[in-house]
Length: 79
Image 1 (spheres, one colour):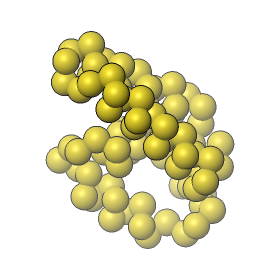
Image 2: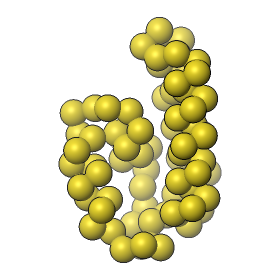
Image 3: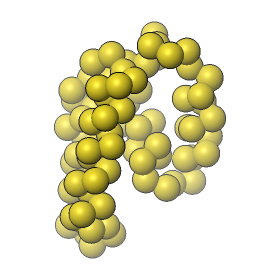
Image 4: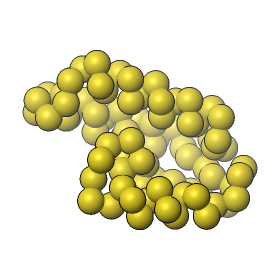
């Protein structure tokens, strides 16, 4: 089982310096072996809210990204 915390999840959805490495690592994890907690969802939403407040992102992008994250949680992760 591989637990993904927020610092690993954010680069999956927001382009960062580590995004390519994170995607490459995630592709090596067997299907059904990824776990997240509801705290990760809370922290991820907080990161996006801060980006909107700091005008680094739009509200529309944040809402769309949260929706994509929730789909990943539902379809690919154990919570």
